[in-house]
Image 1 (cartoon, one colour):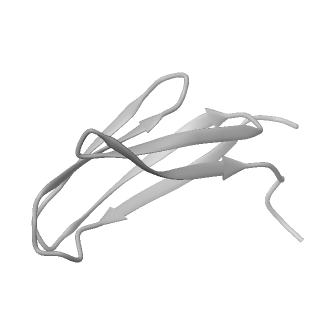
Image 2 (cartoon, rainbow, N blue to C red):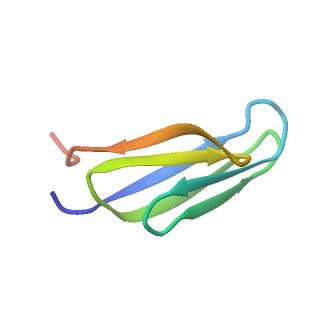
Image 3 (cartoon, one colour):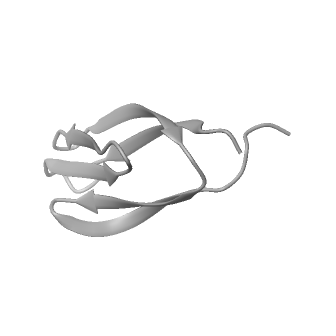
Length: 70
């Protein structure tokens, strides 16, 4: 499969500021304002699982495994 672009959005629902880092081959950092959201378009992701770090700890994973479309 070809690399896929993915738009990643992180939302602060707890009213605090957060720092998120997608640990992809080229890491992407987001500063999420208190009660707000931050987004980044990540291009070049290949099939795999990428850790999402929140405030210094692994909290989630982004799984890329299929091509977009019907």
